[in-house]
Length: 201
Length: 161
Image (cartoon, rainbow over all chains, first blue to last red; front, side):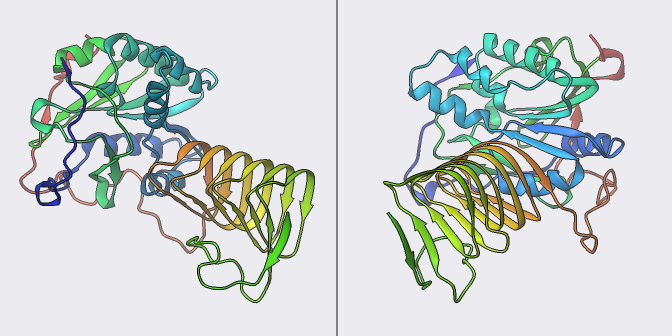
């Protein structure tokens, strides 16, 4: 279901409390990386110093390609949506893990399918992908980054420079969109945020 | 125009202070340089540079108007402008919200402001004395904080469907 672009509030007294939760999918993802210390992972953003400093020491090479800001910028320029994928020009089977965060929430189904194809292409066999999806309950007034804190605690930090559409999907639709992947585990939190951990077959 | 200035508070407006008691060289907005730059001092680039930059123990700043296509070796690097290339820093790399960076970064520490236009490969030098949390070991038995509950959406029998 597509939802109109985010509403922005300028009233500081109505700023929502920052949402935090402990991410089981991220913990499982990092545990998986621990078994291949020389691994390479890709984070599709939004680019965040906290996440870079959390992830980089745990892998050999951390790749960051902020697709959120690229989507935003290219939409503003009126470029066709599918053009944005040229930025993910990495070699096939380049990564042991990819953090997609809630990027799919900002794409229509055809673009999610393209992202899934690219993710499948870029991941090595048994590579993992983390996908986060908002629900009606957890819709935020602006696009957020998921900032990694201690003990896999994620805080949502508003990215007010980004204006992207929002698509909320049912669990079944999410699983169908990522069908070639094996769904390892999925979680739903009391705040309404859902996490999916997929493995490339 | 190339010019030099003495350091003082508010000179660059950057969080990383260039090394003290030395002059900073500024490559002005209207200057383009192609070639190799080597120096024993801090450098601010507001113009255009293509080539390589070696400042060893010093601080390089690519200002918000700067455009750099180069391999860089410096102690600290601050990017606020547009840069393509590889950075090897002895200490810290700072990417500000105005930056457009595409390349590789190797440093001890890195900071990235929200809003930076970033495509990077990042390798952080591991300091031996620094303890990182053991990978694969959750801090608590339960991954969630109290009052948070996780529900598995996919049963074992559903996997692969």
